[in-house]
Image (cartoon, rainbow, N blue to C red; front, side):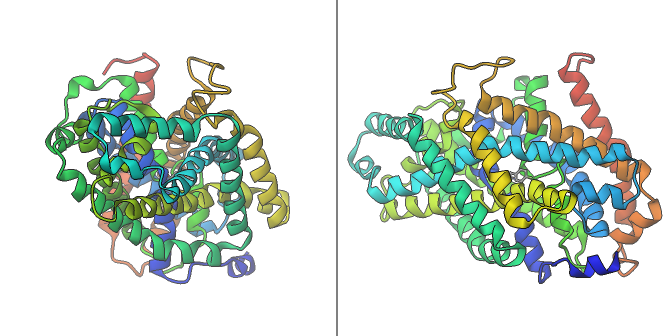
Length: 461
Ligand code: PFF
């Protein structure tokens, strides 16, 4: 086992670990999903609930996944075997593989919209906005979005392009592929979102936009809103499905797992909030619906840049960098089934990538446009797009998180856990470990169970 430990690559340094992990967390979840769910779920109270979920559920689960991954240096299924856990616990890994697929079915489709927007902006499809009235501009962005996602052929072609890009990067290997991209481009995206936010704050609708985002109106909370916030916390930080187990299996022995998790959670949350700050002022300036749904990002950002110098260039840069963030997040998503096929089914890396991508394209076509080709198919009140999202984010990932917190909190060897989290005694963080274990044992599982029971109506909050 020592041998296989050594053979596995590790990230080259602490900063590479941070950016690679952030590369998994930051993605369409921040820029596309956080704003659209915040809009659909009534604003501030949803954001508040989401932040509570990050703190009391997300971070403890993330640290637990880091512990499992770095200790075993295995993928999510192999990790539980390595820890000599009963076969039942391997189900976390299997559920993770399923969640990965479910997410990729719709994520690759939305990533395709983003890629296509890079080309639309280059073609000058939004150039007319500069001289249009507010009503005309709002109509233009709607038309452009409908044109981008409508019809079965073009969105599917973009989805194929997305999968080709992701597959090629994955085949190139962990270090070369992931480190290089995330280290250089994520900071650029961050800067651009800040520019976007500053511009949005100069719009007429800035104050109502910010109020919507930050002023909680708790009457808007319902069991399903709370479940969405919880699901978003898991989706955002890539938790409950083994992604972070697989990623941390490449961490170095020196990384401080608490610090890495805090840095990732805080940076990720800042990016989401900035995206909200960029988007909601536009919504209120142009009289749009905050609950406009999956198109919200695509209909608002072109308006942010429409009347400023170099607007079109900035718009292209925005969608380009968003496509990079989506791509790095997909690398981590794909890594879950790929690592599983390689390590548990002894497939070659190339074969595993091709098989995974093939399955994603085959089923992912169902989601290419939630309102068109397969839009009439409704299962349990949801189309394929929403169904895949709901099952992964709101059911499987929180269940995965619950099992992980129970496993680390109650089943795993306490001494082993403390040893790993203190980097074999080299960190002086006993108090921190204690607090973490208390939250993990008592608060995290309790909250998860309460939200679930509340949602299926067994208890009333
Ligand atoms: N966290 C990513 C995002 O917010 O876009 C999505 C994601 C990546 C979810 C990896 C799950 C995962 F394993």
